[in-house]
Image (cartoon, rainbow, N blue to C red):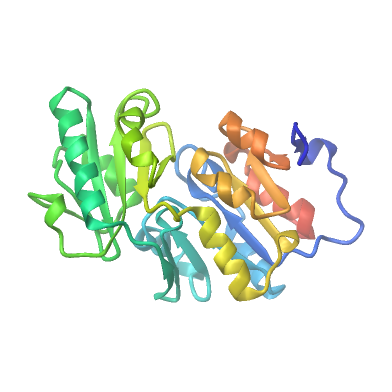
Length: 286
């Protein structure tokens, strides 16, 4: 892996024969979606052409499965969704794999959030189950952020008592999460994944869970190699899945650690970087 990734559109010469890509995996926020959370222009024709060529397109996101399925409703048939940062993988409504979080750990994280809030931190917990997400905070500012990623959510009195299989706990901090909430979760990091997935979000998951673990499982099941896999990401929860692909791309606006880890740079999410890169490498006109 090069110390400094090569910029695709500036330095990577298109192959004489399009690369043998069998699987395209992309993060959503900050990667496929622009900063206004919009799908890129031209996405649906590109997905149709990938399908025609036998290339599987798979969204890999911290977002809830129900949210992803709604966003891709027009083309969801046969698509594999790597949801909840890799803790829940679904195809055509059928679970392919999951990595649940122990209920005792989820409850402990929720209590940590309550203590932070009592100390004045503007934070709330989203306990993510397979059927729904659950929150205790009911103020409109917090719920507006929850709705962006969890179309199936419920306000409950006690998130530690929900009757659902919990797969992760997501924390939203209205301030910079790396300065406040993430350090408060250090005690969990010794045994579990504590992953900063955005400027205001941090997730606590089982120690074996990640987008990368989910992707490697999918590659094994489908018989697809890293050399046949293209991955796009922008934040720290994307690092492991970048390692699972020879064709790994950090968006030009990505977190510095993501840029260091990826093999190549793609244009930013606001410049249609994912589709432009697919077009160049796979040979699909935009």
